[in-house]
Length: 188
Image 1 (spheres, rainbow, N blue to C red):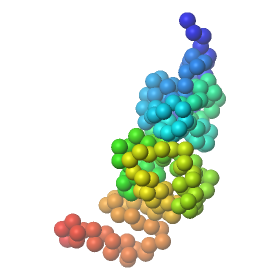
Image 2 (tube, one colour):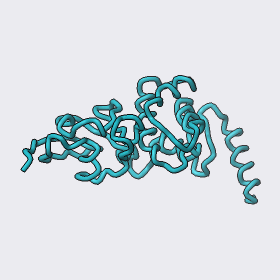
Image 3 (cartoon, rainbow, N blue to C red):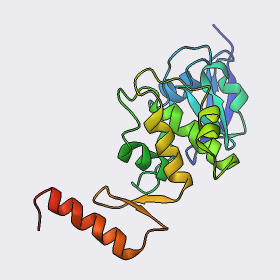
Image 4 (spheres, helix red, strand yellow):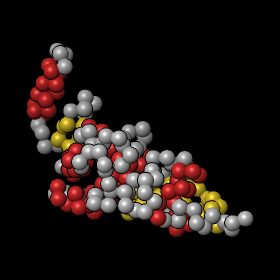
């Protein structure tokens, strides 16, 4: 029988104390023990980034980190990004900007993007692309992913209608956009 080690870790704001095998990967602990299945297993070699989570606010690839290394730390998963049933701005931006196709890379992309924006709140397109280099997407060509991250950096918010409403837009322009969408949809 393998030996076990006791760990205490906070995941998405909830404290857990568990006995784990020393060689249990953090991604396995999150998925299999805690049911945090938004953290995906892609490559097991840190190449794809699908398993990206935050450890004390810093992006880490959980497929190459042991659960025992998270002992005494705070982990945030994609499930922990939303608050009170409301998507985080990056999650909403990925949805509204169509920054996903199959969705497999999306949790890791969002987690890495959040770290990028924490370090550099106003990145250029080039800086966004460089900041996401360790996360692979095989579907989108990255253009909409970059657009989603840039929209959050630029302070764009998405209203209930899905219309992009920037802090810099006047109320009149925002109303015109909303009216134009209503007319296009045949709503008066």
